[in-house]
Image (cartoon, rainbow, N blue to C red; front, side, top):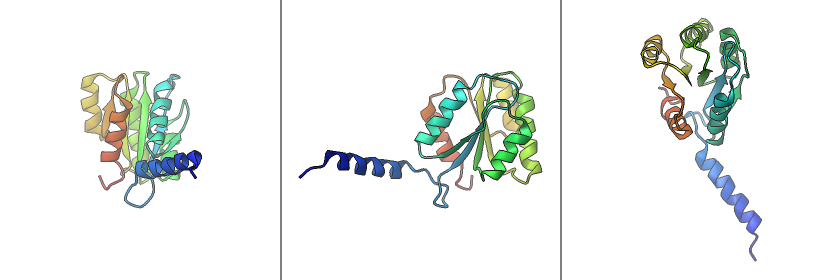
Length: 157
């Protein structure tokens, strides 16, 4: 006798297990997604947070108007593997530098820092020189962000 609901649930469980992205320590990659500064536009951050979660990662979304210290403290408390910043306000140079400094001050300079927003190409180069691992600009498919995180976070990179 067939139980369609049971089959569907079994397939769903298998799918979740297959998508569970791990750090090599049998736990999912843990990413803090944050909106530092005064920018109030959080749709992109929420889309990325949900996409990473749906891909099997643990995601902590900090909400709007976070200070660099709050973002870094959350990352340390949550034992994050990465911090993703969403910045649309034009203050990206200041905010990325501040978060990087706060992470280093807490002994967490090894946490991968990446982000996205409306950021000019020349500033992307400068941010990479500061130690920001990657910058995604508007229109980047969520699948590209997911693949980048899988490849560059939580595996001793």
